[in-house]
Image 1 (cartoon, rainbow, N blue to C red):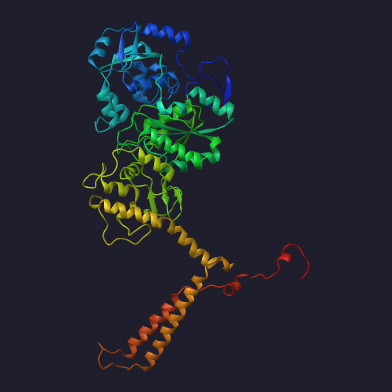
Image 2: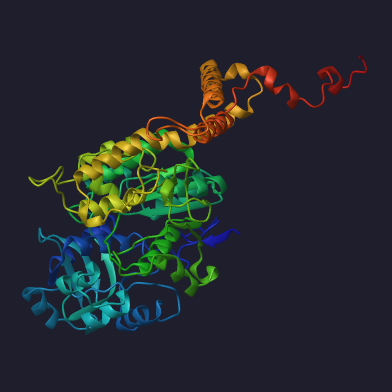
Length: 574
């Protein structure tokens, strides 16, 4: 359905298939004379120092990424969001936008402020980034925020830890005006703001639907690609946004992640229908709530559909496996205003010979290569190209350059336990002798696995993953092809040879039975007739088990209606 949407504060109203969250795309970016005057005013105001994470958040607010928010939340919105996942007016909003600066100097400045005041927000260079108009000042309870937002106060949770490290005791609420945007370095040429994407999607490309996909710290893998291809089958466009900045040190550096995406998209995706742009965002580590936030961000960029994977914005083991799916049960599609498409965990099944999910594949993990983001990162860290079935080499080759530290230490260990890495990608290895292989006499324990096991698993997959379906197909084709010239001659010759040799064995044993004594003089040296007969019986059964050598004459019986082709084509001629 086309909706009337006001974009970027412009007077004209354009008809698009989507509208920003709350109905209007926020624009708090000052330009021209207005910006120059505000910059001079900011230099006369009391100022608060802000870190890079706050700078990024300010830009997201000002450019409409977080519409309808025009600044940091007042106490009513802040508490309503924490308790209900909605703003005070009832509009869905899953995570609070709060500003509670730390530091002695900042604290002294805050103590001097009152509602109605303006304060400059400056970065490390002491240059103003934004002006905050104070609408509210309230106490900031870190424990309350952690429990309501994350469901835990455990500081092992990175979001909880961030609250205690970065947040002070007093929160400031009110609208902001952005004075200066930070240059995005290598991403500057790829950056697209919401005001640009609406025009790109619906005026230039004439899309009627766009699937949005936000992804985190991993290079593009085949699980991502599975979701993308499903979306492109029904949607006009795909908007891929890898998150940049604010990632842990052991993750693949964001420059290399972006390049790995670019390499795969250039090679395997329809160029006119796929748009790649970095999303410079702060990691909130809010688990399922962050999945809802990302859906609304996609909406503000103009996407009609949000593509959500199994572990979207997951945080270790703090949330249920599909918490990022079930969270959407709390909201209707109408109030979210974007079509949510949920995808189950993707793995590669060597028996299906395809990426698949539990919804589509009946085979157990004996045939699976799991697509684990953490496991893939560790393979890259060990200096090993992951299996092509789960990461395309175009992606992995570039991503490996952005993983540090790389390699292993003097004990041949890396950051993550090797057993955990093996189990996460090669689940079969602990209980089977190779992919699709027989059961081990004793299952292996995760703690006993070593780098040699990783090497064995990698070699096994490289040598045998392709063979599972290939050899199954070869068996089917051998017994099915009636045009026998497409089958290798040596298969039939080998089977005929085995058959002749076994016939020779049987003839020999028949003679042996005929000559055997009813009772041998020494059972350890000689066979009696009954034992020779059992030997002949086994050899005869082996002959029956030898697969048939199929040639053209052997398959003529399969043509059960021998009418000439011209009769099938309507001719009455005999």
